[in-house]
Amino acid sequence: MDIETVSHLIEGYLLALRRLSGNRCDFWSLTTPLKDDVENSLKAYFSGIDAETTIIGKTAIGYAELETHLDQHLFSRLEGGEEIHRELFGWDIVEFIQMSYRELEPEIDPLRSRQAMCFDVSSRFYGEHFYLAVPVKETVLIIGLGARA
Image (tube, rainbow, N blue to C red; front, side):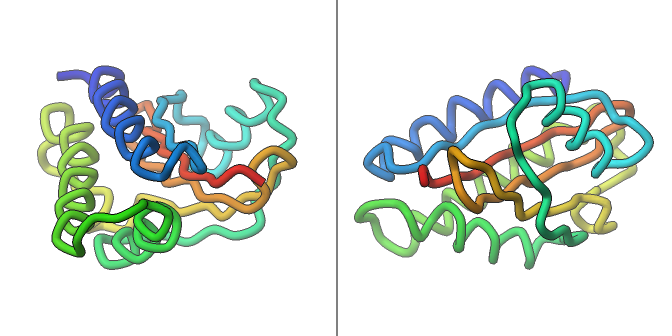
């Protein structure tokens, strides 16, 4: 399975989670070419869509930090559900991320090696929100999580 297909699968899954937020949030997934490094790739993506988005913070992340960011930016916005459901949602998202590189580069794990990056960003439409960027070969898998400002 290629990274674009995985991105589309994540997009569909995140759309279902959006419904659980009462449509107060938007969650999306896409891919963009890797340009020098992950941050420059994200900036190039922003400039290409004229998003008026500013990076206000960045952190290399692993599995534990990913769980914290998902809790803060995604699961805290979902309506209802038990704690176990939130854990299952998190596991599903990690599985999708792992699918993005397992078949292409099985010897790497961008979360374990902390090559994945979390970006706190600000935009007029979403206010402060979050992007997860995972480098896979010549591509970056980007997952965005934002509540409408």
